[in-house]
Length: 117
Ligand SMILES: [Zn+2]
Image (cartoon, rainbow, N blue to C red; front, side, top):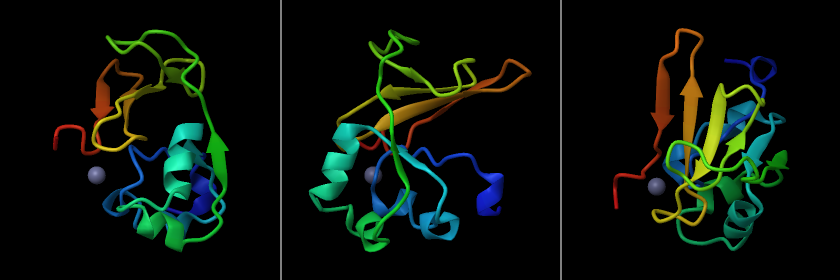
């Protein structure tokens, strides 16, 4: 995968094991909420790797899309339902679930570490 093949990176949360390859995609927007960026900037335990990359191309998003699949708020990234992000704090303050819907109708939920605790 090359950076020019990638529109954006949507981390499920900022723990190191979910972002260790992000440096290979330098310049690609990294989508985070304001609260997520605040957590990264706090240099909390587990954010050492993302902070070690220095300045990244952060792009803020908000959960302004209303309820989705039982979650009270959402962000429909492209406005077509193909990629929808919902907040799922608990594991970390910035944890999200990313729903990806394929043209076939199959829908996947990228959970990050949501089921770890
Ligand atoms: Zn984690």
